[in-house]
Length: 238
Ligand code: UDP
Image (cartoon, rainbow, N blue to C red; front, top):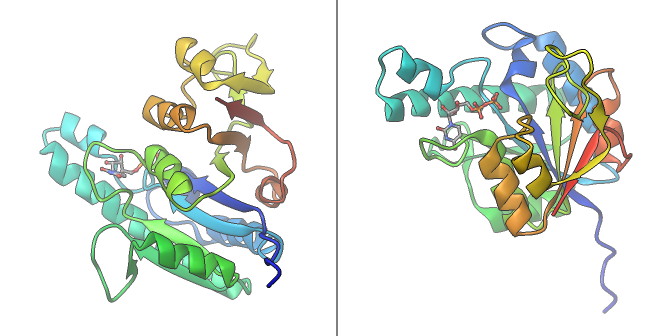
């Protein structure tokens, strides 16, 4: 039997901040545009997505204001599920079949996280959206993106950023001399304190030789370009 040619498989990380368009909650216009960008690539690439939840809650911020960290982190994770459902809705409207898998059981709204089933969905052309992070407090969705990419055998983690189009030598919003880096190693990024993605995610990718591309969501079409393998933004390698 001849083996079916495997399509490129990627893990796309979308920050929650993007979903809110800078505000609390979900901005339907923004999510709909992101969904259309993703749907445009679904025939060519197998796509899994990890969504953040920063447009709702960040556990670390709530705990600084007096909440128990674990409980606040669970609130953060529940926020990512709301984003996952919003993205699912707009992806289906854009013609892309989807499944949501959650790391916290909530069988009415999402399948449980089952990696082999996620792979099967992708082989069938469905976009798989992972909600609820890792289901564990003290983790970030960046780290979950790296972990899920490894577990489902993705070739690359694509980190779509809001308001910045890659990794810079310094924060471009604060330092006008900052320049964008085309390519960097994980160790270099860690040593230089380049903080666009969290350090746990960087080290997990470094230890397991997983490539990461950090790029800007804007202008419209950028997410499609990254999904199709265009070399935009910054490539981070082991
Ligand atoms: N979170 C968590 N464990 C996880 C993933 C997320 O506790 O595995 C919580 C954590 O409080 C985090 C919040 O969910 O701040 C939202 O995720 P994140 O900050 O990564 O979202 P993003 O910045 O990408 O929008």
